[in-house]
Length: 297
Image 1 (cartoon, helix red, strand yellow):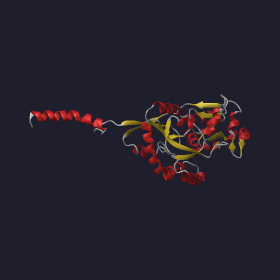
Image 2 (cartoon, one colour):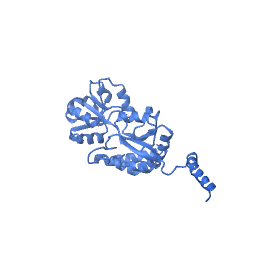
Image 3 (tube, helix red, strand yellow):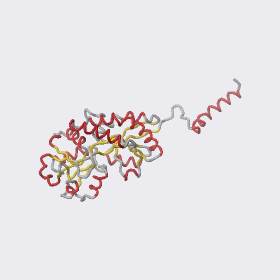
Image 4 (cartoon, helix red, strand yellow):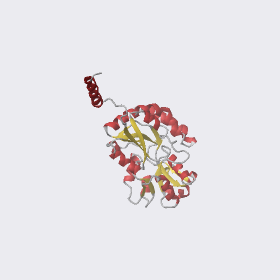
């Protein structure tokens, strides 16, 4: 090969990377973009510590969600609810796999189809305090609006968490001294300890979550009573929410395809396994019926 051929080869080597970039063709070894997955310690959805670590409902489907987006590096970030909301607002490419869709959030987040339905939030109280709550209980359900109006520090909540439109509406109208909001990473566990010490009367949460956290705190779950809230639907839908950017919307399209494959059987069974045996079959039947009635949700 002569000098002229050598110069031509060198020129091609210099130009080739530029041509690859302009054509949109990925270069060998090119770094992948990073998708941040924001996880909260929210049993039975996600579990950070203990013998059941990473065995929550969402923990077990994360590999399938990652596989639906192989062009990205997937990084898990542990956050509390307040920090997670802030990062979803500020980050150009982040997703939370266990969010409830609210009209407010829909203005700035892209949401997936429903991944699974969970029993709605309710009110947990110490069994020994049943008599003081009797005026607020009707047919086994609790009048949350009346309880909130009954006095200071009556209800504990997790700061920045959405409990669904119906409960959020009641909390938004509550007297300022009626609520005790906790911002920490172990918010439910800390609220349960405050309840045990008599510093608040009740707290709001999911029954499986509260039972799990009670055990983690050394509190016998049988010492607690759990009340559905008057006027609140039986189930709440869980979605994946991503940054409302081109990347986030693209991710949601792929995630939807995966969820449609998982939710008919695997997701239902993963959640049912965390329920008390008497209500598991009821949940299975309800969950399957709801997906048959609304397959596009």
